[in-house]
Image (cartoon, rainbow over the protein chains, first blue to last red):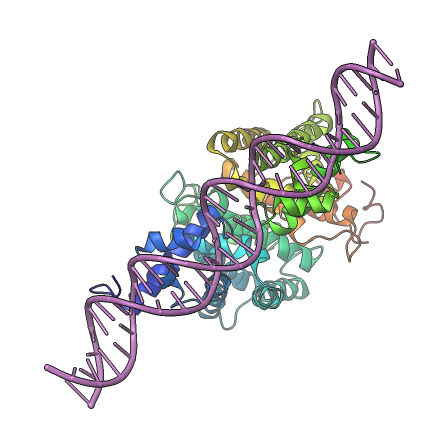
Length: 218
Length: 218
DNA sequence: CAAATAATAAAACAAACGTTCAATTAATTC
DNA sequence: GAATTAATTGAACGTTTGTTTTATTATTTG
């Protein structure tokens, strides 16, 4: 056999991407074989090489597009002009929403960095650093305008990002907590963590569990 | 050649453990070959099988001992009777000290879980859950005695652990911040995060960067 | 409807993998 | 110092790996 009826390059490539994210997240990049991936897509291993020249190219493509997605999501969500607290709230909301929505891809981007070549690793890390820089800038602004009370903005930024990204480790949609509740809680924890002096109820997310009536609306 | 002069089983096993932690942390479990590990130890691959029957047994041993170490470190550090804030401070201090000290082993225990068999995975996760349960208990006590102000203790415990463990991702000893400074900062962030009402200077760790004179002493 | 192109299968490649086995030498015990 | 035990080597095993090549069929184009 050769070309199969109904075969379509675009659809196959999309199926490969999707299956790869899910398989790598579940098994790990090294543990996933090209034959396994091909079987998941319903195709022979050789067919994968029409879309990605090597296994590492596939991984890199997934990671790069994930980081690009994160960047552009923040660009779209970032408030044009706002006080640091509002900008921080927007950052937290965007970060959590994006990561919950793309749990598997985030897992891949965070766990498989060591399988990239040096050059590609630095490329991904550059994108990640640029994204984190935005948070540091918000924190710095907050300190300068006395909106926040922070020991060290660099350290605080890393702590916040680890805390927020960690949501994908334990959170499962449809279980005890809703996405809205989780987001509201993280928002309130973040605001306290940075010592935000303004009433966090401003961001309609301070006390999500019934202590305030209109809390859940995001 | 066969047995080499000066060869000693205990020393070899210790060398294997050490090299394995470092190699798995750097390359990943799947990416590390037994031959690579043997070369690092200065031995042939077959010699490894005198100490660990399979590659997975090696991984599991490393993980189990890491978790046991974490548990007993906390047992030794846990204050017998103290208010929730003091117990929380002890938990944070112990967690950060332990994880900074054993960065590589923590990396392995957190990242390579998927390479364990189902049975062994649940065994490791049980140990981890037991350790995390201690934190949840502290948080619950704090809420009940009104020492803390927390939305959801389960969620807050996970957020705190992710934040604290994340220190190994970015922190490198000997760079800009000292271990004491980092610990103090995490302590202060934690206390604010849980809404601790007591003056956090009580724990001699509130403002570590020169704003208070006696801050760095832990 | 013929020619060109796109998409795949099938088979094969050398290399690397975890692991086993028999042989061999060092250290220890009697 | 002979017998025993401990520690290791070197070679080999069958699998699996990522990848390449060639042939074949479906689809699109002229």
